[in-house]
Length: 93
Image (cartoon, rainbow, N blue to C red; front, side, top):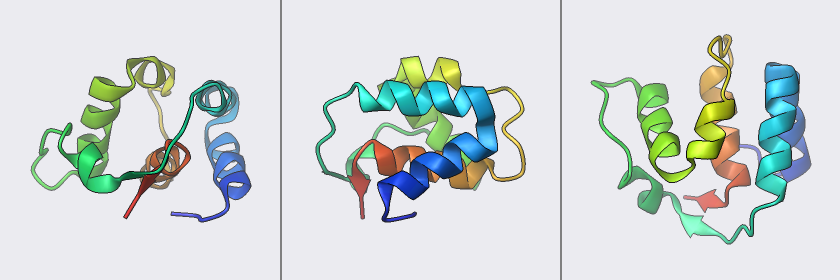
């Protein structure tokens, strides 16, 4: 994950365009506090080694508004974008 939040926002927008803008804008309205990544994993469903799918299940459960904004075609950098979304949401190792 990128440590610089501005770089994370730019990456999401560069990869997902208008959908990325919507997600970044929505996250900016939330009150974000640092939280351990372990807490996020507790809300995920294992997907047979598909880490991207596992992240999506956690986003769907905890942040259904963001889940609805995720584009159907997430592109080749989908996993990286999902990780940066978690970064912006305050999840840390």
